[in-house]
Image 1: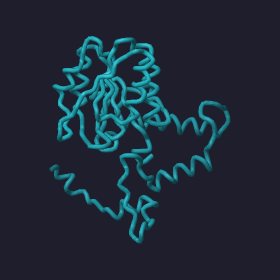
Image 2: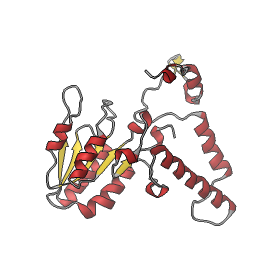
Image 3: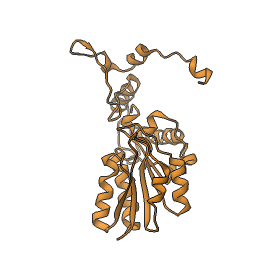
Length: 236
């Protein structure tokens, strides 16, 4: 283990104090929350920022010329810069805000999928996908006559790149795959997946809802075409 990591104090109680909801008691005991894979609780800093925005700076973004609208717009665009740095995206123009991961995947499905995926074309998914990365592609399948192709995992929940590669054909038009399973924690070899897909001219959408919380993300290094995640799982 890196020596620097070993020397970092991990004060669980100090971390808990950052989250007001964890002061609650449930059945006479301090609340323990283990459902962060679905949605994370919010630390005090986030609650304070939300309170400040609604009480001091609330206005339409990019819709007015008055003081509050300008302040809200500046904050909005600064958030875009923060996300760009967080993902190491090439530019803020690569960052598109949606309401959540589900909306982001639907945006890709209907904005990219509908015009580019036709009858008999194939979309490759893994069997570990969250419903948010399944249902939109079923709609594309029904409307466009496309086919969904599923990559399995083994009995230990491991994703094998050979199984993925076998499922790519001349009709594959998109790979839409999770970076980290919300149920198993399995991490897929995204860089290798992208390399293999791009060699065939196939774009790749990565669902990073879980990975964005647990590991550094560099979308330029991953080289994926679309990377989606949601703020509410990264304590936002």
